[in-house]
Length: 97
Image (cartoon, rainbow, N blue to C red; front, side):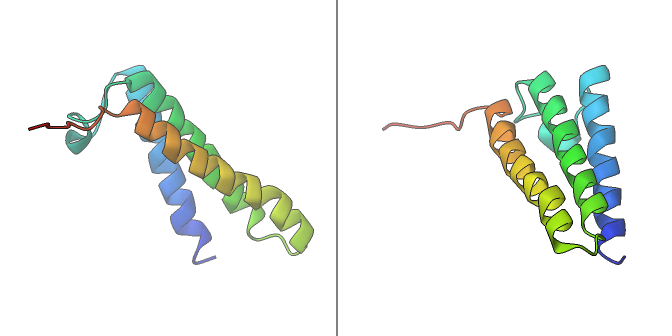
């Protein structure tokens, strides 16, 4: 239970920020410089929130087969989301000199 509550809170915060990015174009202050593809960023936030939600559903399962069937795809979706978030960011500045 002590693991599920923080994961659920983080999932809710990510979902709220994804909805804010999609609906209003709102980003957190420290993200405004880096994010250039706002719609992609919002959808990825919602995707990661759904994956964390599947973790909250699957972790308390007693049966290890059911737990792995639910949580392993959730971990893979979180990793995919991290890759997609890098696609939503501004490319790094390279100086040649």
